[in-house]
Image 1: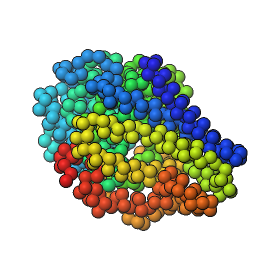
Image 2 (image 1 turned 30 degrees about the vertical axis):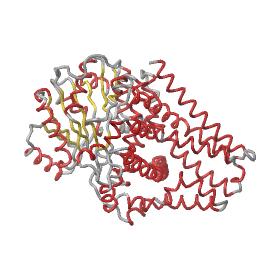
Image 3 (image 1 turned 135 degrees about the horizontal axis):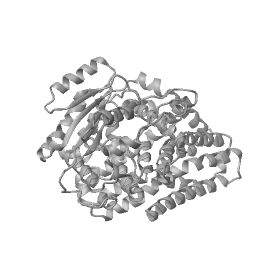
Image 4 (image 1 turned 90 degrees about the horizontal axis):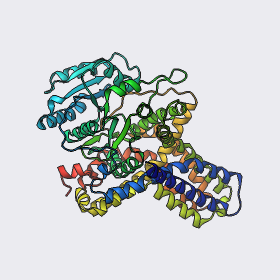
Length: 550
């Protein structure tokens, strides 16, 4: 794995250095000022994540275009993973907490029906691992399972100790006897029988593999927000996951669901202690993967999307609340980087998870500093040529996974057909790209606010998630996004005090702040959602297969 990893880090370094040079060239015009120096220093903290995007995207694209079976080409496992008999017994473990069983049980029923049709139902046993605290919902869980057409083992804890990681470990300790593997599913997960069987066969073919993570994409959505989000996310994740699997090999990621784990080593090595100060580890998955690798067990990624889906948040508020939860969990990893015994790749997984969020306040600081510099007259002392080159290079770098994902589809007749042709794909991609530009700016500010709250002593936790489709009223949107809007007005007022050109330069990177409130409302509006569905805009292949757009 030396050459693939060298390839990744060289691309990371080249991207980060190249973008930094472009920024320095733009800022150097007219001489350096303290504000310009601060902008450059902030960018040094943002640049590594841009390099990560390119380092995963470029090899992922070429593998997906050139390999007959891309996921198989980057899987660090030999042997038959397509037809081998299913010998092991596997638990199908669905973790729930205050969920509606109408959303949880139908996907599980489809999976169990598929396994029965494949003639292997006797090798699998489903479990519902409940941490539900609401008594009415707990009673509804029991009633729904009593009417469920398949036998399911139900276990409910009376508390939420250790959050999801504690839920899973308690199950492995007390209820997993006689099972070699466990397929982990969240309340919004859905996996096909073929996908689950492939995971089992990979584990059977690789006795030292501790976890196999399946690439997971968003399922078809009616609501506008998840519909637009997952259209681009799918294109990007397919490329990203393939590139990641290429250079990480058996030191890959674990996302906590839509994955299979080997019970004995997981139970032995993945028991999580509290952090200094007694705080629970929130984002457990990457820590568990790092622990397994430290103990000599592999963690790999099956980089194929077919048969593995999840539901995305139904509206912008839920999306940003989820981001804030992930941020709080990932930033805890700073306490774990020095743990003894972790391998280099295990530490890198933790670093990469931290980088996903630490760029947000630096991005916001760069925007504020740029506005300050322009308002003070520095706008005339910036190299327009290098600035344009930087803007284009930045955009290509940060969106390289999804842009190359769209390119992959355009280059393949079969993939174009799955998206109902090139024209429909390009319309969806263009719509999604505008959506993403609006989302990213306010997302960076929201993450920054969340980090400030954590620094001021807010206590993070895993609260139950709303997964139900809903509209968002103007009052709710205004209460949530007035800070983002005020910040945007201040920034654009500073740019406008210089010139209209400065405003135009800032619009792609910060325009979402001005549009935050209407963006939140309209992306959850049932009329907008219905219009997108009716015109087949941003339709994913499963939706097209079920009801081709007119």
